[in-house]
Length: 337
Ligand code: NAD
Ligand code: WQD
Image (cartoon, rainbow, N blue to C red; front, side, top):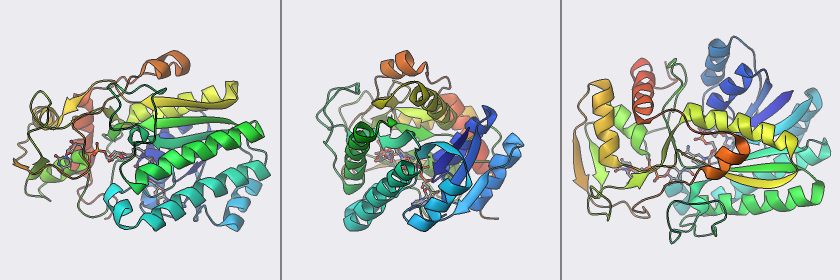
């Protein structure tokens, strides 16, 4: 069975491609490489010893997308493609709404035209309201987004739900918490452009000497050590969650939503201490002001994924820290030579 991964050259898409190929699926990737490298696809092939059909295109281009569906017997789509930088979305809201909504709708139209009935979407914990009590459960009210990026996820969830209802498609909305880490081979990993916005890639770049020290955004939050608490999940666990979601979509119709997290909170200081211990490296840091828009804590209730998908995260914080460093150490400049 062939699965189309839009945005499959990116961080989450490339790791998901590995897990799908390992499970015997055929993988077709459509990516415009606007935030990724074709090298990631070559490395997916190296890890798995299997080939990927790659189309370099913007999935909003109807002709190109149509050709992909016509050339391959695609039975399911996992839609990763989109813009994802929160701060950039505040500065350029129209670009975010245009790209993310248009990409999702064009892919759904392509599926409808070619009779493809299974859809998995990369949503985010950011759709929950900041006022929701922790841990977040899937039935909690959404729409508390604090930035245009988050609103695109909220809107696409609605678009997918309405489309599934009208067409009889089966859709799975996956709300990721904080994916970190890399494939244990160190061949693929997260390769952010410029200075990383997210914690783990920043810590890894301090470790490799590209950045001087970590700025910890606030130590006066109402959390055990005063620093922000998040639900970090190993990228390989997250990728396996997509395989489970595909199987679920094969067996059900309608739309279902799942949290993909570990179900436990980790503070910034805990993550730094674990990174130092796991890798025997010192991470210099200073406390600075809180980052605008940050919440104190956020973690998932993962019961539903465990019960309905039969999926649960297996890897711990030490694995995440070890594998992030393994990738960064072997690829100090990411996929750039
Ligand atoms: P990524 O930027 O590494 O991957 C996205 C990929 O989509 C990139 O390879 C990019 O080149 C491609 N792309 C962007 N617009 C495209 C278009 N119009 N046509 C074709 N390709 C296009 O990001 P990621 O971290 O792998 O995230 C994948 C998805 O998961 C995104 O939708 C993101 O919003 C979502 N998500 C990510 C996180 C996270 O923390 N990484 C958390 C929650 C949700
Ligand atoms: C984690 C913690 C920071 C960097 C973001 C998006 C979210 C989702 C995942 C897509 C926080 C602290 C960070 C640094 C720090 N993406 N921190 N110094 O903010 O939970 O989530 O990525 O959907 O939408 O908002 O992740 O890794 O940026 O931050 O102290 O240099 O680390 O304050 O407490 P976040 P993050």
